[in-house]
Image (cartoon, rainbow, N blue to C red):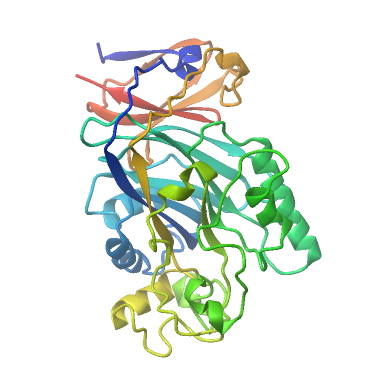
Length: 388
């Protein structure tokens, strides 16, 4: 019955074992990272239409974003930006400073969970998805870590970035398929924040699809830069910074197990036509890769370019998550008296909530239509399906 949903909270962390079998078909998905420049409804500045134009040109299956100010960005993106497919946003978790959020195509992925890894400045977000394969493929579990590391040049800032990626590696998943995505704010490939991921002493090994010999502010590497899209300060376009397109701050680093699954030549700083613009905007001189209108949208939407790549999944045994002892799992929350239970819809809006006085708690969902929702208890979020 759906009149009342009996939430046996401890059971939320337990996943059953799935029967899996080898398969030979594959699916290709597009992963994109984008710094949205302190985006919220209050700081929209007419940028929603620009984001829509940019995203419609890329059409990622998974979009991970940094610099969201509040929960208003989720519903806005689902209803007005990612309009060509049934996208969902992950529920917003408000941490220190700006925050991360994921959007995903519900025809391609199921959401499993998310959590936060605290650092001195901003939390690292962990999102776990499961593929919805075509051709009877078994599903694959894919983990995304979304970072926004400490900004600015200098040894003190570099040390803080290193501490942030060290915290990530101390909490990294055991799943083989994983990505670290986001705004790294690094200036050289010798930074410890970067080598912590590519050549770690402990944790998971990630790879850079573009190699490790890149340099900033060098015309020879102009094609890979993602920041900054403007040469002047644009207070009417979200604020941000200026300085021209001379830094590679935005990265998608797959785990080593995915290295051979990156589609050749798919790794792209979208809108970067390779013309050296070390002190110029993305549309000066006129962009040779995208239209004048799209170049203007890239300039106004954010001071970063989106970065995407295509990845091949399937063709292997599914990576199934099973917690035989959830009490030992880092994803298992500590259930406390008076914990707040919330249910979100696919737009990230709260549609039901209640304080839980005990581990067994009835939450009335009579008013909710059948469909997919997310249940949040403290810092743990799980997918929830309500049927007729």
